[in-house]
Amino acid sequence: MKENNMSRRSFVKVSTASLAAMSLPSIVAAGADSPESPAAPEAPKAPASPQQQPQGAAPAPTVRPGDSDAITRAYFDSLLVETRYMDAGLPSTKFELFGETFDTPIMTAALSHLRVPNGNGLVIYAQAAAACKAVHWFGMGEDRDLEDIIATGARTIKVIKPHADNDEVFRRIRHAVGAGCFAVGMDIDHAFDGRGGYDNVFGLPMKPKSTAELRSFVQAARVPFIVKGVLSPHDARQCLEAGVAGIVLSHHGGRVAYSIPPLLALEQIADVVKGKMKIFIDCGIVSGMDAYKCLALGADAVSVGRHLMPLLREGADATAKRIQAMTAELAGVMAATGVKDLKKMDPTVIHRMTF
Ligand SMILES: Cc1cc2nc3c(=O)[nH]c(=O)nc-3n(C[C@H](O)[C@H](O)[C@H](O)COP(=O)(O)O)c2cc1C
Image (cartoon, rainbow, N blue to C red):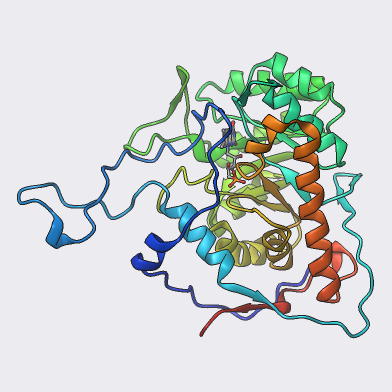
């Protein structure tokens, strides 16, 4: 089990000016239809300052879509890594999950509706994961999509929506396990619409789940069951109680505009989990260094979604090469910090920028 002995850190305050100045990497999918992406309340562009606000206009919103992505990037960049060369050696990025061994802890993310001109983006994404022996995740989609994904040989985890109708959840669990998924899960953060109501995805009503309902999914799955969208020690505790095998720390790519960075939540959650469940993390990971910071602070593996999406137009090889390049960068940082394998990650190499 990994240690997590980094001293409690205070949150780095990010000024509005620095947020405005920040340029995020291009995350817009190459033609991907993204009904999944930010469903945060539609907010008009805020005037830059109260002085500019026209008289009688509604007050400027305090959060704007995209804020959580920008804050997440700022948080990644606020963490620094110390080097440790003495007694160091070449590292291994082999990653073990639920009894299987993968070449990298850098996984794909649970995406859906990937339309690209050169074929089925969902299948290309899975082919890339299979080619670099990475864990593959799949989000919303038809049963047929999942079967096509499994046929690529990608070892896949299917994430099911929190359908209000639990019979639909059980049906999808049965289908995913029967199709060959080695784990299944649920994105619990898709239950609400951001306007005080329950979400409705393509006409399918959603609802938050209780701990007892989660337990019933865990029991029905008979493969490891994972909960995606956990960002608090509270939810992590309930997942433990329900017998969940792993959690994904995620704000669903900024779906909740005001969310804290998953990496900031990680330390407290790792304290609760104490190695009893796997901890995965996504949102804004674009490099091996980003992945390293997550792994050092207690994550078992990371997922990369929007950063890979534009590459799908170039095909599975190009997408796989990017995952491999990120893995090589991760290995480079592991070597320079004296970490020979993923089980030896040490949070004390991470420093908070205070200057
Ligand atoms: C096009 C698109 C589709 C997505 N579909 C799903 C989905 O069906 N289920 C899910 O749990 N998350 C879904 N997500 C969220 C991703 O799994 C992930 O949490 C998010 O994109 C953040 O990771 P990233 O910054 O690496 O993209 C989707 C994201 C995108 C961009």
